[in-house]
Image (cartoon, rainbow, N blue to C red):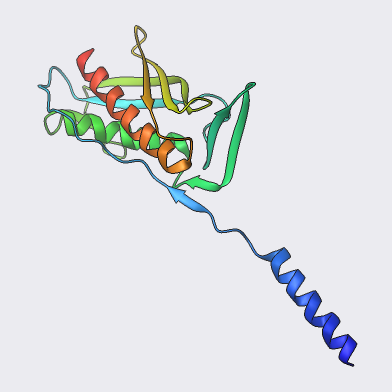
Length: 176
């Protein structure tokens, strides 16, 4: 009986650790305040966001050397990356333009708006300690933004992406 109890205890301990799920750390993006610019023309709206293949997910993805990706399954975004980028970029634009100049996600669009489609050729950190955005919008505009970060840990990646998106918002406004 004593041996049976020991075996049962050992089984319970190993099965509990086998079935325990590692807790995920969840990250979000911050809006970065900017200088308010004047508004020209109809309100703008971000119609669509296109991310590089493999990046539109909840897992944080960092570029590694030799064209490899580090997919951090226990370090995740609070939503899919496309939703976070759309939301953050739209609110960064709204913070920089007079009220009513940006139609935010979920708001109804007036009859006259200027739509922006943003295509990200690159939106990632790594393999160097920097966050890089390479984006096109409006058919003729392109920006490459590099934000140095302290390290490639996920908190620094989120901070670098927030700063890079704020810089992109500034450049979209300047190019109007």
